[in-house]
Length: 282
Length: 275
Image 1 (cartoon, each protein chain N blue to C red):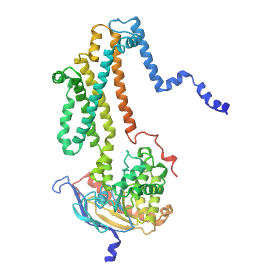
Image 2: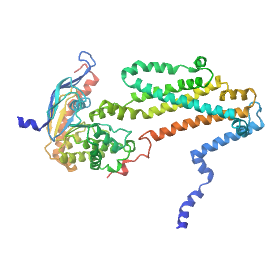
Image 3: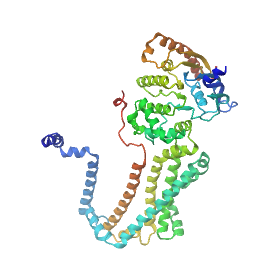
Image 4: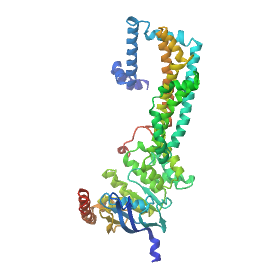
């Protein structure tokens, strides 16, 4: 029994060379590419770069342990950043969805209100940064407000778009089956909106991150932005890169949460491979 | 006379449907004074060139459009631009299955919309799925099925609600010929078993002859009923029916009637002023 199973499994595995199996797997190819870039940076950073501006990745990793997470002030600044993003994003989702539902509810409300939303969305908000600081001060409130004002618009826009693109066919089908207005909203319009809603939630997350981190870099007197400035002004690139990498990891973490939520909560999409009619026709 | 009235399932009286304002040059007269009585348990095909208003008539009967003038009565009840889901089920050309629900959930939701008690949902849905050979796909999402399977499920949903009347708007138009024929046989079988009244819009001549008790042939726009052809063969019909001389005679008759109308439509498209 054991010899049989080994006979069936090993030849296939051993006959293809390792490098070709790597080249055929998108995952490993991606990892290999990242490793190659890191190696190049390592080489350049070690032997050619000016240490005042660039350090090799190994030194960045070292700095992450020796001067980033070992500094309680920096760690608490990172936590504060995570808290600010969470609050700003939570507010963006709640208000964005609510406003989106109101604006998208009827043709009339959409015609009346949607242009205002699009207009506000189109404004480059960085130009309002001084005003935001003036109103909310230098503390976390300004960063939350800035993250919120960035995150809310893509959510509103995509909720409205999702409510608008309901297929006439589905509405007609539902009405012919005797669906009431409430039935149509609950079972047609809202589920139809879900994929678009998640597009909005993903964009909203990206922009909330942008807003909070922009405000961090611009104003803060003790947050992550403050430390990046300190490291940069002292020509100390290793901890600077380590700190920026930490921010990137935080961003990836938040984006992953939204992506996983999307994959588990969007019904009827790519759950299983498509079945061909040939295999079941009697 | 009274006795006769009982047997009429659908009565269409002088229905005219105009889209847009009559005073505007771009308004379209889709149906012009159409009258038709359909008996209980009858299978009637509406056959005509594309754009002749046959789907419009179906939507009027189903209560999705309110006619500009004239009336449609279903089992003695006036349809006044409102759907009567307890009496009428619709099957559309494209599957109206909701992609966010599984097949069985789609059936449940249809039964829920119709106000049928929850305890009956599963039995009814599974019986209808079994009738079209799709019971093993109850937990699949519509996107996971092929076009033919989806339309079969869609048809089963029209059946499971157990209305007396089934309105079908070119339900097989998007399917390949073989699937069409198999589903056509299924439908003929179903008609014999359930005694449903079916109104079926198509522009396939063979489909019309194979399925119908009567074929209402439409003129080009504005749609009027040109002739009604009787197909005097009992349901269920086997594929052998298509080999009988009667089948090709009727098919040719329909074609001869339609050919003039199609030419008229084409002439109208080429030069709207000429007619």
